[in-house]
Image (cartoon, rainbow, N blue to C red; front, side, top):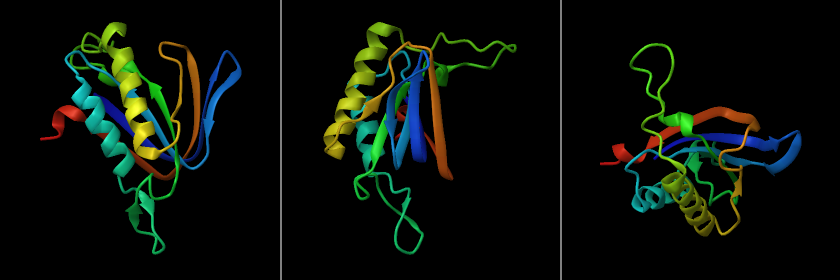
Length: 150
């Protein structure tokens, strides 16, 4: 699984021109599930997301986690994170997991992150045409791939 984590002052998802989800200070997480990903990947990434120290402390040093600041999270599924661009100019998505694997792992990631935070993780809608808005705070953007954890 691959995540793009953005520290935000606010973020939202609209579907069909209607607001679906919104958060204030916290993290917008784009979630890509690849063929071969497992529940262990989702669990590890959820724990890592909750504990990642990318919020400033009193001295302005990135030393506080989402848990520490009681921040919010918005998770949006995004199969394009697994695009292969090795050949030609049209990305290939053959490494992106199908719905049968991707939906349960996306759900598991969101549930485990909710448990770690002690609050609901807001979500997009899997497979929907979404308009995602955000104000990246910092800017701080982190990419994490569960296959690179060891």
